[in-house]
Image: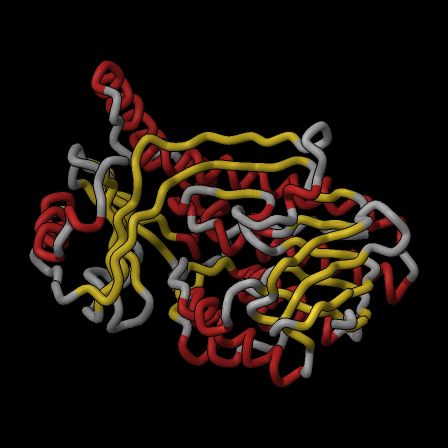
Length: 401
């Protein structure tokens, strides 16, 4: 069968939120792009992920023309609570940062909005693309080969964005002697439960309890998302709904446990926690975006937001390159993106270390005392509180100029 030839300025590998957002921004800027995704559209849209959006992410989604539902349905949070030994401390994000906040709006909904905008824009997207291969990424004319519905394709492009996640193939195109990988795998997992029940509190609550970490989050005024720290050996079958709710009540302060409304789970999942950064985030004409280049534990609510900042950096660079002939900026993507990546990685590591119970008996007593000292310092220091608040709402994006 003859290979079908297509062309574009940017090939985007992966149709998750980062790939869709990048594609939408570039479409609006008149920079044509093609998105390739190995999964079906239904699978991509059905993935349940995070729901806390930084202001920078919300602003970028608005710039992409998909802010209407966020503004109508998103829930603005101006604070959060940290709990240690049942003592509740509120961090006032708005006061500490000068009007800063975060938005509660599920990643599933973000994906839905972006997919609808993609269809409306007429941008080309190939779902269930098979045998995707990147070629000549350091050459003058990179290209991508793939098969779709049995038809072989050759996609000629000027640049490639690898938005295909931690398990994707884009990162593996960078030679091992060039790529440096930094990783920490945490010795516990998160067990998450989604339910159609009112949230136990109107703001997020992060709990450090001697039995393990807990998080009370939400997706809407009637849908809640809860998490528990569990051992690596635990499986979903070990956690029927009744056991989950009982354990959550044990870890919450009494004032919250008494208000907890339980219900049948809509979804349960176990998530491993790791910190991972790949350097560089660029190789020739290939750019790594989002989880393809870095993973953070969800404790700091940075995963999707960090991907959005990568998208913003690459979008601004490509826009200036095509509209202002600033091709000198192309080689700066990795350096600019990594500055924010490492800061977000640090904050996610800090929150994870502060809130989770040690699984090493020999160190547990010492680490508990260190966590207590950390809590006492941060909760009683104006500088400490401001540091947490600034990082939680999201540090400013670096300028591209």
